[in-house]
Length: 141
Image (cartoon, rainbow, N blue to C red; front, side, top):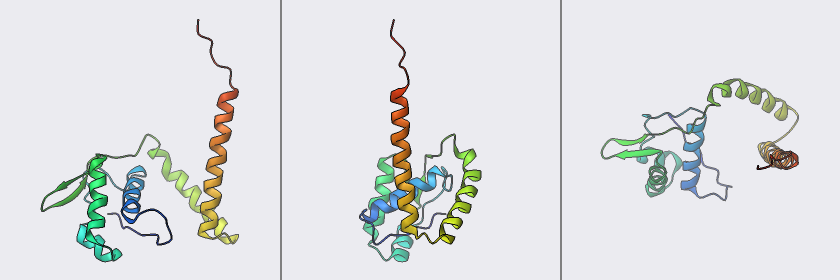
């Protein structure tokens, strides 16, 4: 079962934070088709938010085809976002946990880690795009 956490400093709307957390859980295999999302009332109480905010998040997940509401029963996952890479994630996660421990021991804050990861992703994406552009393109006949 997923446990939602809100970032009060985030500029992302509360309902979208919930949607993003469900999508992340689907990508890494923490949620699978058939799993029930927490009850709206329980989420609202634990996060101290309006139940309509949770309903909006669950409706968004339904619109995206990731969940379905069953009246009187709850909201259930109907589709995963986990790809073929899911099998490799356990080993990569272990490496990431070790790296995070080293980063924290080196004095990096959570914000420092996020900034380092974000900038590295952008730089790697730019390097990859530049590399792909420098490759010779096949000539049409």
